[in-house]
Amino acid sequence: MIKFAVMGDMHYVQPRCHQNTLNGKPSGITELADTTRNYWMTRNTLPDVISRIKALNPDFVIQTGDLVQGHCDSQEQSSLEMREAQELISKIGSKIYYAMGTHDGVPGAKNSAHLYDLVYPAIGRALGYPVSNGYYKFLSGNSLFIVLDYTTYSRDLNQREFLLEALAEGKNHQHVFVFAHPPVVPVARPFFTDYKFASDVGELLGQYHADAYFCGHTHNQIASLHLFNDNWIPQLKSSVLGYPDIPPAEAGNIRVLLPDPAASEIGWAYMEDSAPGWWFVTVNGSYVQADWHVLHKGVMGALSWRSGEKPVFVKKPPAVRRFTTMPAAFDIKKIRLRAAGSGFIDSDNVQIFINDKPVGNLPYLEYFDCRQYLEIDTAFCSELSNVNTVKFTMPSVPCCIGGFVIEIQTDIGWLRSEPSAFYVNTSKWDQWNERTIKHVGKGEDIIANLIIS
Ligand SMILES: [Fe+2]
Image 1 (cartoon, rainbow, N blue to C red):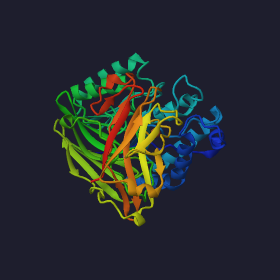
Image 2 (cartoon, rainbow, N blue to C red):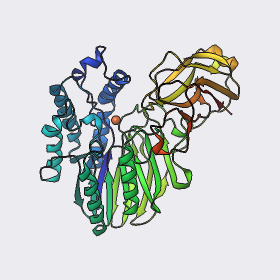
Image 3 (cartoon, rainbow, N blue to C red):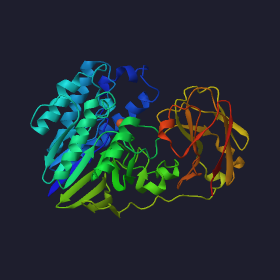
Image 4 (tube, rainbow, N blue to C red):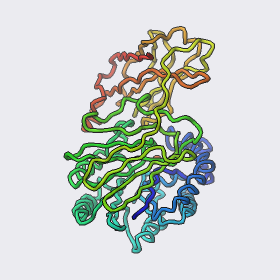
């Protein structure tokens, strides 16, 4: 029997390494909020996660990237943060394998020397031989484990050859598990991965009928099956980031989910910031069971399969209750218009109208971040009804805007409208051919209906 754990994004933060960001010079628009939030989780969530995984006594752990927050002030600080993160995760007491995330450093990029000094040597110690890059394979029992480096995939032509050879070798083993940082199928964050990596790897996973693909990157907690080359491949995402005590938000209540229902099956899907979780997988002969653990809650979901068979969700978390009745005005604490997108950095010029009334300007939208919204005065509740319209004029900056959701906070939880589609005014993402994305022109007026009940 083999027992292994898979941990997604960790984003360990050592604040001494982020003085630029913490003192008003962040490198990106979400950097300060990300660093601050992830420092809270480093102190309050990670130690408990580490001790819970240690208690499960896995044979080994695979961490699927973004071990650290990274983007530090200097190379010295980048090395310090990486060293501390490795020391923390090593408290699990099992071998640790790493898949590369962009926050961990990229070969040739600024402040990435620690890849050679700390990360590749750590992978080498787990493998028992030195490595000089971030993709590799190893055997355990009857299973082959393949770890990919998406940060170098597009420019390192050897990696596709490596993957092909490894998957072909997998025919000699009962199970093949593949690991990398990003999803091959975006579920709730459009385009939030590398197209070449995703399309290549997805096709090959199906062609060689890999057992499962584990990843992180989006910080969502999502278990799904996807049909590639007539084979159902589980894509099992996780992140140990999150606030353990906030109720999880179902991704389908906040975003129109991207996969085609005819070629996918969603076991569960939660937006980031809640339900910090990890996978614990047991392999016994031809049988595999993958349990999704949530901090302080135990096993909340599971799927199992035998070699060559379609996996079955044998346990799913309970559905999150969705409120659909408009509350009385005095029960309303907050009203927000949630939005998401990529490339919208001009916050001054796009005015939003709900039911033809102006409610403010659209905020910056980048990375399809799940925390971007427009705060609306609670007095606006008298303007809302069961069917509402949100209207705006598409700006000229190339961008994707959408995922509008009216959210009303009461003492018993959030009441949400159904989410809107995403609208895009550029061809830069056309290769994805996402079925839920609507192409619109610059300067075009967009009206979306937001239905509450
Ligand atoms: Fe991440």
